[in-house]
Amino acid sequence: MAERFELAKDYTISRVINGCWQLSEGHSLQTKLDMQDVMKAFHMLAERGFTTFDCADIYTGTEELLGEFLTELKEGSTLSPHDIQIHTKYVPDINLLSEVDYNYTEKIIDRSLKRQKRDVLDLVQFHWWDYNVPGYVETAGDLLKLKEKGKIRNIAVTNFDTKHLREIVDAGIPVVSCQNQYSVFDRRPERELIDYCKSKGISLLCYGTLSGGLLAEKWIGQTSIQPETRSHVKYFQVIEDTLGWDGYQELLVLLQRIAKKHSVKVSQIATKYILSGQGVGASIIGVRNSRHVESNTKIFAFELDRTDIEEIKQFLDNYPIVDGEPFELERTVDSKYRDIMKMNLNEK
Ligand SMILES: NC(=O)c1ccc[n+]([C@@H]2O[C@H](COP(=O)([O-])OP(=O)(O)OC[C@H]3O[C@@H](n4cnc5c(N)ncnc54)[C@H](OP(=O)(O)O)[C@@H]3O)[C@@H](O)[C@H]2O)c1
Image (tube, rainbow, N blue to C red; front, side, top):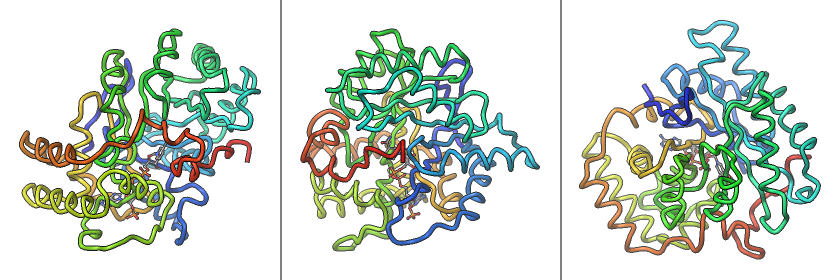
């Protein structure tokens, strides 16, 4: 069974969260997903203790899909909708940031409630595309009002850097978690964010753990990739700026050696390494089918030893870390990291 973690008082989650970006429109560049198989994967995961799901108001169709999943649970399962935690996001469009006010925020939260068929949202992760547009502290305050009104159980942020998260925390917003990219390729949170979060009791929920599936045996010995998903595009950029192709190949070989020692797979070593990090509450792993469910249960069937962790860390220390704070390049005009972002999906 998946390990659990108390993210906030009386609120526990699975330490691997099922990510749903992969299920939104346009994420798969080549194949069409089999949604019956996806629903089967949701049931299999929940039965194995992976009861927490990550979606967003901007991941088209995913909140509704999770709402359907809850209905299926009601109609006949050992689990009930109350056994499931749904983490959504509030991501106002960049074009609308200057117009965001309490009424707008409440409208989007009500839409998420309706889509998910819930009376209260378990966790809302707030995102703000442009710090130069004022309003993020006030909007976080509006989320607190909606929490007090009973529409939101827990408030969180996503893709915030240390400075701006601090502003929100200093304004008295009870942030329980911070969802950011953190993986063997992208170690920007190690600069400052992790220590800050630890000092405030805020847990890191990490994406990019498997880098869209690039952390798997099947890539060993390959000389290039043909991106099949938007995740591949995104994480390939990170590899280019950190390990490079040769370093990536060497890392895969190292992870495979450690994986063989524990009779598991490269993906499980990559996940366990991030889960062993200080301040990390959970890793988010994207779901596209039922193929990886059994394999992912192995994450909790072994432990990395100190020497494994040190060996991976020492290897990574030979390579550069992506510049800046978490999500800084993604916010920088003309950066390749920003160029692949879609910043106006909420009103679509
Ligand atoms: N806040 C944000 O801005 C943000 C950004 C990105 C992601 N996220 C969240 O994080 C989630 C994860 O997204 P991600 O892009 O970081 O992808 P990821 O979790 O690193 O990779 C997911 C892919 O890994 C492969 N995989 C899964 N289990 C595996 C296993 N046991 N062995 C080998 N491969 C395995 C699958 O690919 P195949 O099906 O192709 O094999 C799957 O589609 C998203 O769904 C979303 O919820 C949030």
